[in-house]
Length: 332
Ligand code: HEM
Image (tube, rainbow, N blue to C red; front, side, top):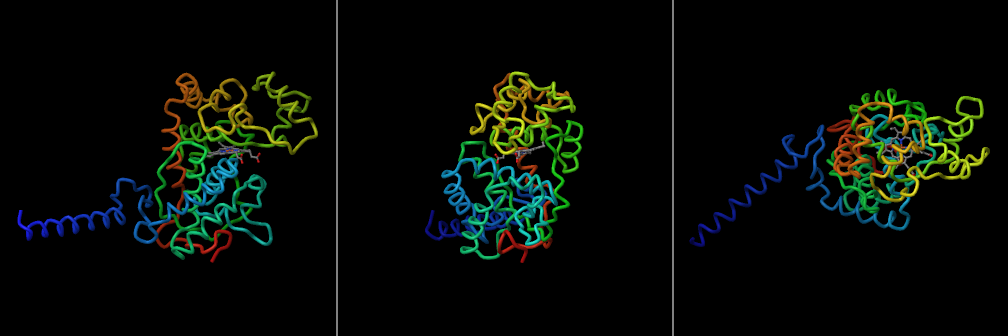
């Protein structure tokens, strides 16, 4: 091949490559597109974004691994109220934002998201949304504790509204039919419900949320018959009747490890909340739990990744909707 032909070939490869990258970044036909989000969204606008998120999240979560559970839960709470639009991050001086609602008062880790965002702002100001930052932080936080990885298609815009009265999250006292409805209202199916409930493989709750279940289930000093009586006794030792603050592991013996052990726990009638135990009362969720128990969670990581991608695209804002906040705790 002559030098001239070689040069022509190099130029051709460059042109084809550049158009591919452009098509990849902008096209709806990108194989990793989901509801207008896509991988590589910031490739030209802020190429280092994923690196910054990983670095800062690692700093925080490796120093305090309990933040992994907190950040995963924060992403879920964000997506279930007005979609994944970063509205959970907004603070209000009147204490009337989403994060002031009772289910959100125990959320932790806002400082991680804010630190990641300010690191990104100093590199590429006004480009990356807080909703995307939270979605990436949640994924990377789980990765720090060696949980599953999932792709995070990007391009979410930030919402401007965060209202305490709208924080109607699924309740730990709900039965499976109500939970199925909660999830289907967000475009998530029964499999997503049971798979994502598997997030309760990590993290803690508090005695306050199970007091009634173990001491006074029907108002007659009884406990929920759906619970293993021996486990109720263990919980009673941990949570005396007037204790509303002590923490309780969601997945006893394995609460700091992201594995499929949650399904064993539920199968043994040791699910901490009614919303966990009730997953044995529907044929589809029950079958999934049994399958996880008998295969020792063979497909759990894969399923969890798939359902997280779906969760991350619930009711997202894209295009010209919303804004790109410069601070995650304040609207522009
Ligand atoms: C199915 C409906 C769900 C209900 C009713 C529910 C309810 C709860 C409750 C009541 C707590 C304890 C909070 C506290 O004590 O303050 C909790 C913790 C947690 N939830 Fe859920 N949850 C559900 C689904 C999910 C989903 C879909 C995820 C994530 C994908 C998730 C992730 C977590 C995590 C990681 C924790 C532990 C938080 C920590 O240790 O800081 N939950 N959940």
